[in-house]
Length: 80
Image 1 (cartoon, rainbow, N blue to C red):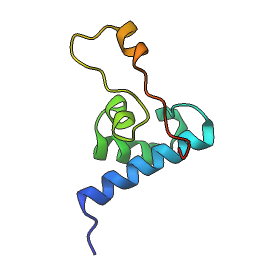
Image 2 (image 1 turned 120 degrees about the vertical axis):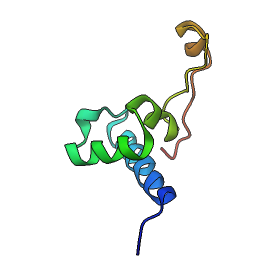
Image 3 (image 1 turned 135 degrees about the vertical axis):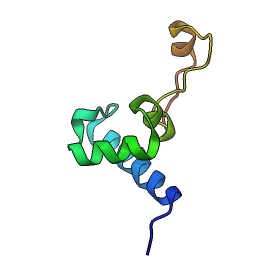
Image 4 (image 1 turned 90 degrees about the vertical axis):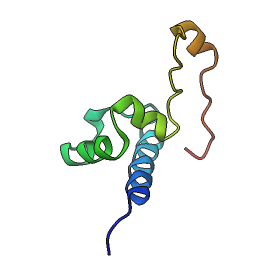
C-alpha cells in the first residue's frame, strides 16, 4: 500500500505537534534526528513553513512588520 501525499503531510504535522507538546516550545531541527528532519522538510517545505503547516507558528504576511506579527500572535489550543 502506497502512502498518499496527504498522509505524509499529516504524519509530519503530527510529529511536529507531538514534539511541541513534549517540549513546551517550538521544536527546532535539532530536536529531530536527520532522517525525521529531512522527511518533515520534504513533506512540508522549509522549517518555518513546516511549523506554520502544523499550526504552531503564525504565518508571515507580506509587508507586515515584526511588531504587527507579534500583536496577532497565535494562541495554540490546549490539545497541542
